[in-house]
Length: 289
Image (tube, rainbow, N blue to C red):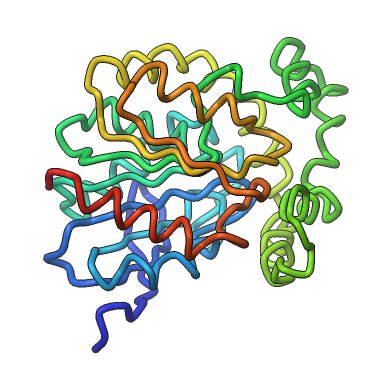
């Protein structure tokens, strides 16, 4: 069996079946990949082969996403605290003792919660458009911020279009030099899951709870300052949601952080998986495992 052979597994965590992709030798250093909205571990399909020749790679689907369980929002509390609680059960169940953490979009607040409670397990952090700074929030967040401040039915309903096909495709194509570089199965698969019965309320619950992440930014930043985990920020510089200032923020709290920008949008792996993968390999080589 080749080292980069990908296995598609399921584990039980917090009462849910969590789907995950696994590749690489189990005795190699582990890299945990956490996806964001509105995608799944599918976003790592091009990165995993680059990393798994040398590393043990694990990429789960968060609850409510991809092939993991997505119970109705009346049966499961869709908050970032609970997503992190589920991922804690996941890493505990797999017996992960130390790993590098790759975070993207929603995966960042989930991953940073894990880092705060598992400091001894974090060998390093790779943030790909994974924000932890208010300066990194673009004006595209204004409708969501309105919902945070006034969580009325009308403001909730105003966010319904955020889960529509046009917005899903926009997230992939905006800022990309040529939209023909974007594989159509990306936004098509994401939309398939977004259109499942009950998914809209799941997403709207998480959009409301995203305010808890902004409230936690100071705690995340304090962790970067005091624990000084090795950090590599790899950022699509034309991301319409998370601005380059969000990447630069890491260097303010951790002067040793490395920040690299790529001429692309939010889903940087769709156009720059090889470049990001090589930058990650150079970064991972210098970590203490």
